[in-house]
Image 1 (tube, rainbow, N blue to C red):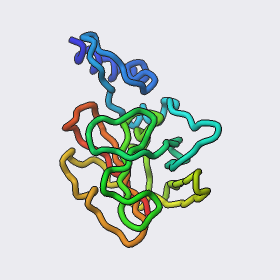
Image 2 (image 1 turned 180 degrees about the horizontal axis):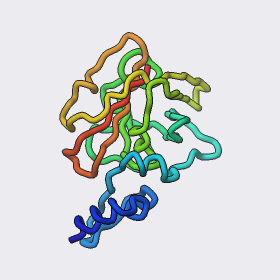
Image 3 (image 1 turned 60 degrees about the vertical axis):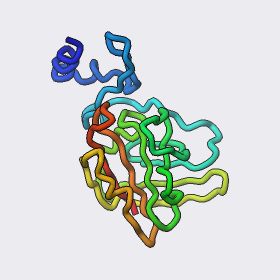
Length: 181
């Protein structure tokens, strides 16, 4: 019932179903995050805001209005909102090698990656060290299976930033990959 309602509602008025891009509670009281479409990624305002005096490491894609702090991740499906996580075992962003960042696929987080284009600017800022590095989207890989770890294992002699988000709310749902060098 609820699924059919959401599907019908989404086809008629995506903004009404998607809401603010924040997690919702289903009629059964279950926590869920609705999937992000390119429409929702483009239309909905971000829900995460940069603090007045940021600290630590941040990733920004200005054209897509993505600005998120980067924190160490544990590789699990426990992903906090308003943060990008660095996959364990990958290098820190801006260092030679592959830095694998992942975040929720909703507006204000990595959802707008669905609209990324080759050449988009990606800025990595370390506010503690006062360093700024600018990369550019080199490839929009697009949709990949959830268990395709080849992008996680990518190597590079130069800094490579692999950005990953989900395209639906299933743990075993497909992922969206964007590369920046």
